[in-house]
Amino acid sequence: MEKLNIEGGHFLKGKVCISGAKNSAVALIPAAILADSPVTIENLPNISDVHLLCDLIEEIGGTVSKQNGELTIDPSNIISMPLPNGKVKMLRASYYLMGAMLGRFKKAVIGLPGGCYLGPRPIDQHIKGFEALGATVTNEQGAVYLRADELRGARIYLDVVSVGATINIMLAAVLAKGQTIIENAAKEPEIIDVATLLTSMGARIKGAGTDIIRIDGVDALHGCRHTIIPDRIEAGTYMVIGAAMGEDLLIDNVIPQHVESLSAKLREMGVPIEVNDDQIYIRRAKQYKNVDIKTLVYPGFPTDLQQPMTALLTQADGTSVVTDTIYNARFKHLDELRRMGSGIKLEGSSAIISGPVTLQGAKVKATDLRAGAALVTAGLMAEGITEITGVEHIDRGYEDLVEKLQGLGAKIWREPLNVEELEQIHHS
Ligand code: EPU
Image 1 (cartoon, rainbow, N blue to C red):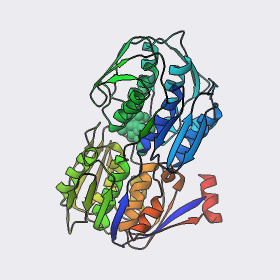
Image 2: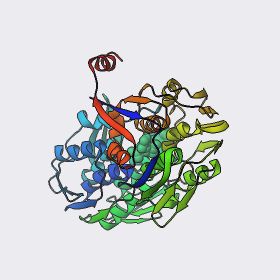
Image 3: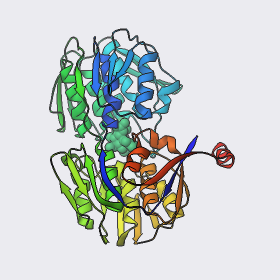
Image 4: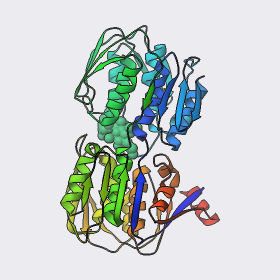
């Protein structure tokens, strides 16, 4: 096991290229199960969540081959094998195997998903959708059992706007008989990306990216080639890092519209940003104005960028309030930021941040993926050395984080954990 060490205080310049979107990738891979011939996906990020899903595809009989940055999944020999345990428990997005396996085989057994702990993360809306399509769903010993004689299109109103439920219902509905209408659907760019792949496979989907999605079931889906969208959360993370420590940082391969809510907030703070077609230039500000942030569903401010933003806001003059309305317990990073000297209080689902403060390097722990991004941001700004454990969370979602930051001039490196640190992890 490793930790990340960062010597803070070095300004960053140069170009960083954004990878394919993690939250698209983890849905596109299961979506390939629905085809009857190979699906090739270009620009998949090299992250552990993608590796886990590829392993799961192989476990159920699929073939996965990688060549020149593209991944081909041949689903022809996939069987409806139960996956109640093992790797499905290691990531959140394994829940997409439910929709995809149900769609193709009309049955599936998938263990309840793992992933980052951000407070309760129910999947009741996924289940509601599967049941509306005609499936019987039971939960036995930590696994979800799904079975249907046939899937029939239905009108499904989501009580909660959910990215995962919207995608999972699309996956189950594309091969159902008749029309499915998802109302109050999530509108995130990743949903459009999945719909684009499914459409290239022969599915008939209208309205992805709006809150009403119409799916006309087809009899079969075929292989295709698809290029994944850039990761808006990775781009946003580098924007926050650039706002903190950038001297002309160029973020390449980004869809600026996808990060508009963040750009607007950074501008409000006084951060200079210039936007080109698929690039963003960003520099740190001399002084940062305090701002308030409320996380919302897309196109509102993303919950996934709330954590790195709280780190940046320790540098703003006065008090900033960050409220997470999507995951009201997504604040474990605050304890760690406090170790680094920040004055942050937690009141309900709001972080109250008083600044500016000079952060000090410390030994801290990434408790989840974006908490890790927050600590990396803080470490780059801090005086002295910051040591971050829990790197495996960061590796789930950021391709080549260390190499990309080193390329910008950051002093960041990996180091094996020493005996004492290993013991601490063992006892925690
Ligand atoms: N919710 C329910 N019932 C459900 C589903 C969701 O009550 O059946 C609630 C959740 O508890 C949450 C809200 O609805 O309060 C939104 O959850 P959503 O289903 O949209 O989240 P998700 O699909 O499980 C995805 C991303 C998350 C991201 C959220 C919100 C993936 C694999 N994960 O999760 O990404 O935070 O949408 O945008 O796509 C991350 O990348 O770090 C990450 C956690």
